[in-house]
Length: 256
Image (cartoon, rainbow, N blue to C red):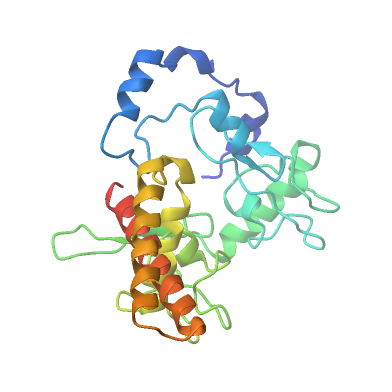
């Protein structure tokens, strides 16, 4: 059954942000912790978070969820399944589409398009990401139809599997796929993506900076004692900085 959940985006009032604000004492206590978690379990975001998480001119909602990505359809009138709004059973809202008919003003035309899609495929509007069948009836999340990527290696957000943070499966028709368990490219990319979710000041503290400088100075002194060429000395310091940076990223990743 197709719902009009997209329309609710324009009418739902955001919850007040000050209901879950923390006192200065609580904030100070958190700053004294050994680490700060990367992802908060609290779905309510503060005004500061809203201000710094602006996406394409639209702020993150008060529930902490990202707003739906606007479509950019130009020829389909947003009445084809490759329009994400239409495929999700939602009206277009604040989209960049042209000659759109996926709205209340074209309800009759939209209903005919929905019926035509369901006649061709009764599961046309079912979620693309579902659960696979395991031995006990349960399974991991998987793409019900599989992706068809050709050039991205399935490591870009226009791969529906990668965007949903799941690995490609045997039903995918992708070419040159790197979105699988043993893929070093995928591990590196996901590792950096996790680290990027945290603002630098949450784990690059003054103590961390100080320790990093000590390591760099020790490496520089070592290279000078060995009387190595200046180019080699510079390379040794840069490599040491890279190792320090990876340790910082690893530490932040483990707090998630």
